[in-house]
Image (tube, rainbow, N blue to C red; front, side, top):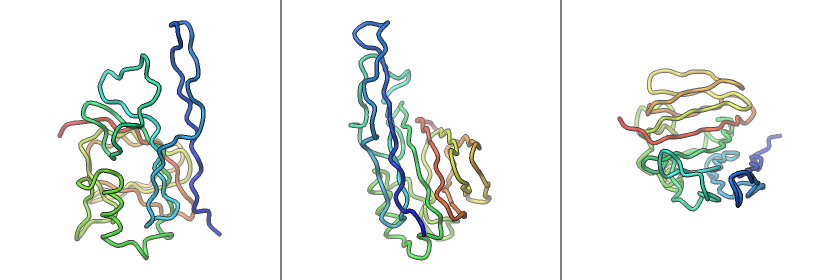
Length: 185
C-alpha cells in the first residue's frame, strides 16, 4: 500500500520585532502555498519563501508568498521550495504530454517545459537559474539530457541552468529542498 499524500511542511518565519534586539516568531504553521500535480499522485511543491531582489530585503518582511507562482524565481530574486517526488511507478504508465503541459502551466512556467520527442523524461525542464538542491529523505535520479546521477539522503546538487528532471526509481517518495536563484545564460 502506498501513501499518495505528501506531508505538510511546517514553516517558521522569525525576524526582528519592534526593536533590533527583539527577535520574534512572526509565523509558525504549515506553509500555505502547496501545489500538486494530478498526473503524479504524491507529488507536491511547497513554496517556503520568495525574494524579489538581491540583497534580499529582511526588515519588515512578514510574508512573500503573494508573489506570482512560477518555477523560476522573480528577476533578481530567489524561491525556496520543499518538493516531494513520488516513485515513477506511481504515474509513468498514465502520464501524457497534455498532462505534463498542464502541470507546467499550473506552476506558472509553461516555457520551462522541455517536453518533446526524444526527451529522456516527460518532466524535463530548463530555466536560467542557479539551483541548490538538498536531498532530505529517500532517493532520486537527476536526469540530464545525456546522463543520469543517482542521489540519496544527504546528497546535494548545484544545478546551473541545465535541462533536467527528477526520476524516482525507488518505491518510496523522495523529499528535497530546492533553493532557486535568478541567473543568466
